[in-house]
Image (tube, rainbow, N blue to C red; front, side, top):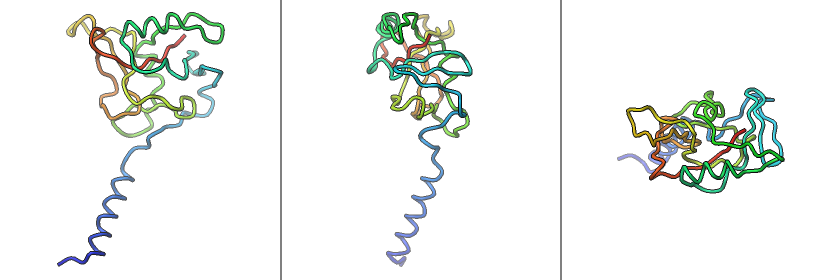
Amino acid sequence: MISSSRTNRTRWLVAAALLLSLPLAWAAAPTGKFTAGTGFVVDNQTGLTWQHPTSGGQMSYVAAQTACGDLVLDGKDDWRLPTLQELYSLVDFNVVGLAAYIDATAFPGTSFGQHWTATQAPSKLASSDRFAVAFNSNYGPVHNTLSISFSSAYVRCVR
């Protein structure tokens, strides 16, 4: 019979090993990559300006397009949905794991889940499908396709 203290020690060691094997939940971009403003973040490597925080909760694709088209921030009104490549530029691939992590210093409070892009999915899929990037969640793979007719996702506008 195994003693209670030995069983507890084994459980603790297994739990500690599992916790240590998990990827960090938040990543940090290289110093100087982002500059934060009021309501936006500038990516100094790509030159893109990102809305932050995002446009509320999850919404349909059409509502996301409208939210970005109607956005006036920092005196600018040329906001739009990002392409898949643009949204991918926010992913920190230095973090090991199935998730797409985003810099928590530049983008604190980023919602866990899918974020719309304007990029149409390949023609093998429905023409109404768009790519989405799942931030800070283990949806695996980093991008998925969502139907613009039936799906909802978060929105991070760009200019």
